Length: 180
Image 1 (cartoon, one colour):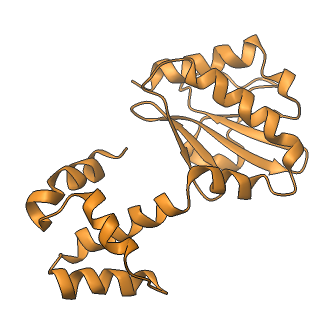
Image 2 (cartoon, helix red, strand yellow):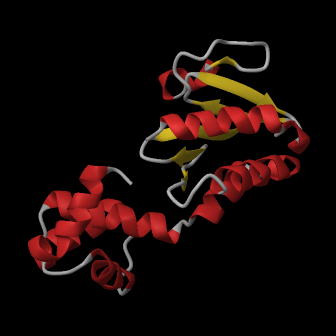
């Protein structure tokens, strides 16, 4: 988790009078059509500053739209690629308890202290794995970052779970090691 966000969450009880989990309970008791309505409710009814109100509402929504739903949406119509995703997760989770899997709308970030990998179902037949391994030469298989831009230094295109082989695991491990 981002350091600034974690600090904000840690300071929430002192600054707002309640913890994040307590605020989530408050929001669950209400029904808001829009994000801004919930933010305004916290500001007006509970005198929460805009920054804290926005953070509380955003984190409450993320919890409601859990990781499994985000991943499920990414692979809708691409279900045949799920074994690749699951194999990659099994590999990275074995690196250590400090691995964080963070699903977003279109990708899944793999983080240690910094993001070191990014998983994206790129087409109906291919998963793109972005890796952050500075100073590693480009090869036919370990290509340039492509659409990942500066988020990653390399990209590996994977069309079958058995392509998550010892060479790919070695690259993932190297990216993990450099993300200290």
